[in-house]
Image (cartoon, rainbow over all chains, first blue to last red; front, side):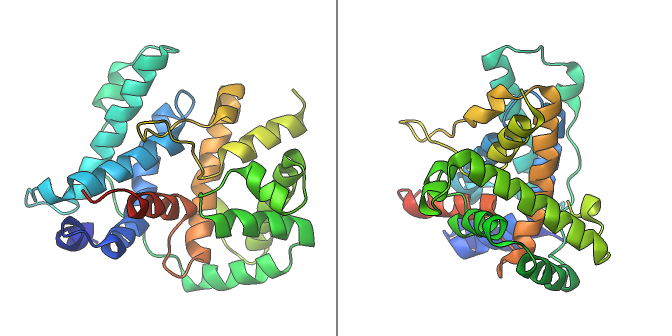
Length: 185
Length: 79
């Protein structure tokens, strides 16, 4: 799969095309940050990286190999992570961190069987965990947990406990349905 | 820190919501700094799986991270 099929539209400002690129690119870029996971908040690095790809898309040149934008994203993410490491100075930057640039592969679209299993498992959740999970999903990262908790009439630690219950129950339910949860990512 | 408090911090870090600074820079989550290395690694792996589940739950196969990024660029000035 070559995500560069979306590149011309992204460069022209098509946010929908960028969404389709994101659907395949997010996972490999996030996975490329694993060596930094105990030192920097990879979610923040990842979001900054993805926004930068949108900004520089009109200037990305195809080098004749597939997934040029994805490979650039992996390099940007690694460089941002190294910059953050140096800024906080909690740990030295090893040569391995500097050298390791994995060859990324785009994520496959979600399996329809997983989608069906997930719907069934969500319906089986108790009310409060289901509410916490739904609040996170519906918010789409736009609101703080404090805001979501308040809307549900929960204290934030209760909200987080319910979210954790939902995550664990979903994982167990999916396993019971034959979904290899550990391999989802 | 009790195991429950640790689980709450990990759950907090798994959100796609991140605060932004005055110049638009994305800040790390406060709870990330309260976790030890094992907790941070657990948060990373849980986030990876959660995003796959979120993408499967979304008609456009978008995780909450992707939706947060799209919302930010739609709200930003044109490039």
